[in-house]
Image 1 (tube, helix red, strand yellow):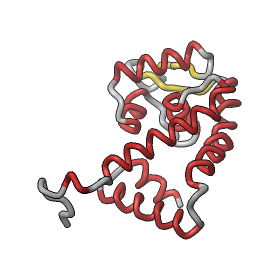
Image 2 (image 1 turned 135 degrees about the horizontal axis):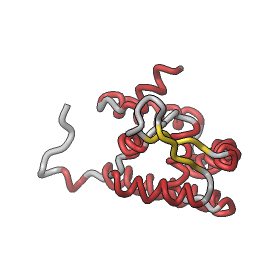
Image 3 (image 1 turned 180 degrees about the vertical axis):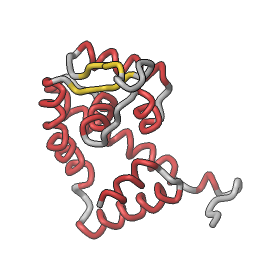
Length: 157
């Protein structure tokens, strides 16, 4: 169902609001992550590996919509911080598997608490019903676009 036309597109704030909300989330998240030396993009990579079972750089590129060059640089930084290791796959030596180091696992275990604090700060202005409605609407949009992470989370429930 079309909601926008070229003539009315400029009257909608939806695109800007979604983008600004993402920026706000990252800014709040970074304040909570700063004591651990983690950035918001690094948080996303560590969460994808630790909580969403991303195993390869290609998995992460698809999930986070990053190009392989950006992902390589990100993984290099995480490896330098000793949170991540790259291992050749036993089944296919051409493929690299990503594993959290012991320090990475320790950090990964803290990330849900850090993320929860950041999300509570961001959406604390909403009541319980508003938050449920927002989540329902965003889920509906992502399911309609066949977002693999959203679909996997729904299937896991």
